[in-house]
Length: 261
Ligand code: SAM
Image 1 (cartoon, rainbow, N blue to C red):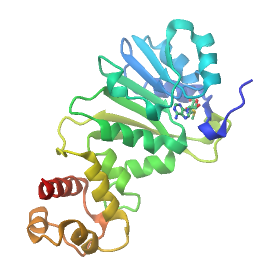
Image 2 (image 1 turned 90 degrees about the horizontal axis):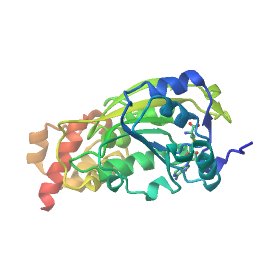
Image 3 (image 1 turned 180 degrees about the vertical axis):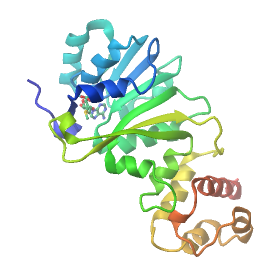
């Protein structure tokens, strides 16, 4: 009997309907799959039933990794590593489909790492990822809402995002204290070019540092009150950070890069 490790965010999915729903969220037959944090292999078994070409899994827990080896033999390739230290862009020759019931404590860190490292050619075809519901709500939030912020702006830059469903704690063992949501991410064909994604992180950090305050102070801090940029992007400095749409933040980042080039 496996004892779940809280430090590694181990809540294993046991609801068969949800497992089925996850693998049915996109067509995976004959595709290469990467699963993050396979745990006891519940989701891995469902993926295998759909006849993928190949399955790679990244699992940090040594004990679970060796159990997976015994359970699946050579049906899967196990990478016994911390996902935050793996460079997925170098692992695959073709675009892969990524599944992950992510450890909640590092879910946004994993997603941010992928987004910041994305080149023009994507290494994945789509991502099917489970988050804590409260985090998923921030990822998909629309502007002018209280959930809208850095996470929504950064995640929606190069990705189209759709919620598949919410999942109750009863679907897991041990039962978490929070609800979860399953999100599906597809690369955008067109997106506003930003040379260094760290600049998008910086711009959103400064603007949302005081989300209830007007835009005037952060704008002046970053752009020295440049009126041309205000007119070009039609920004009213009496608004608050949550009132600017996604594209305005990408364009602001562009202007910031131009000022520094
Ligand atoms: N996919 C399984 C399921 O749905 O039953 C388990 C999901 S559980 C929420 C998260 C899994 O990620 C655990 O197996 C845990 O050991 C693994 N994990 C935690 N931190 C990790 C890291 N930094 N790198 C890779 N795997 C990690």
